[in-house]
Image (cartoon, rainbow, N blue to C red; front, side, top):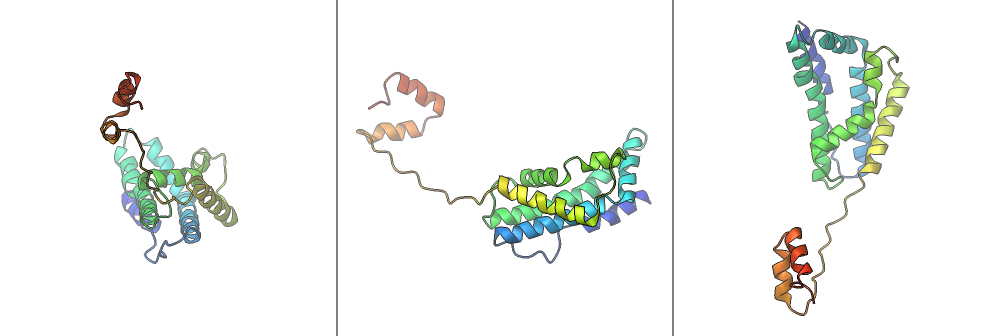
Length: 187
């Protein structure tokens, strides 16, 4: 019964089917904010926090609860966020590995809230506080990940003997340093 409840709750953490096309950073900020609001609202629900506490308390005697919570519950959120990051990267709005980007956004979103809720040292945030948290996380994320610049072509290096340069380009950095130190690559 508990495992079924985890699965049902996890469905609420999937990427929205009607997610707008991510064609600019303002839209990305809106999508990240909406995702953050939905995630924090669902996961900070007292019933969900209680399941996390139960999974932690029973991890040794009933590890399947913790595994299910991680593989079904938490993975739904991570997969949805990876999907958003993949679409953003494909649109040229951010650069990086979607899994790493998703982890970074989640860290900005949650900070230490979940630990505080689990320890009962914080109350569930109000809807306004959840919205502000999600908006702040989206803004911080976009500041950390500016719009990727177009890859600039490196200008060709002019040497007196172009064959030397071509040879050096095929060598790794350590080999180049050794050769240059011996005067092989110098002009």
